[in-house]
Amino acid sequence: MCRGLRQESLGSCPRKAARAWACRRQILGSSPRMTITLKPMSVYMMSNRPGGVLYIGVTGDLMRRVWQHRTHSVPGFTDRYNLVRLVWFEMHETASEAIRREKALKRWNRDWKTGLIEEVNPMWRDLWPEISAP
Image 1: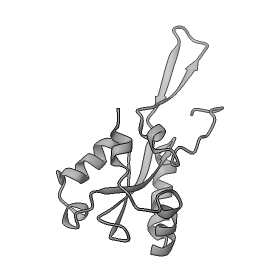
Image 2: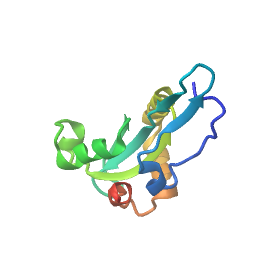
Image 3: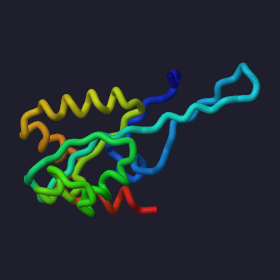
């Protein structure tokens, strides 16, 4: 779909990754020019405290989804266990890529998941202020 684009790992930079960015590519040829916009997908982990319960999810709008978890606006697992702390996320260019990563992470054992979180967020601090900053 969007061939020739540079792949970037934005998961290590929450501020850059959370910005509303889109992959745009001009398609030349037929008149008028067309622009294709791909929606970035996020795989994320929520927790209630350092070393606490973990939830792994995938979304096309990370800020909206984390806000839903934080405000308990959607009943379910994260509401029941008070999972309001965004502790890890990574961005993907396609939905299939993100879903594949989410399913793989869900098969990981707990030690691998905590190791992944602690690589980029050793104190398990909430990343919400960083992604929601203007």
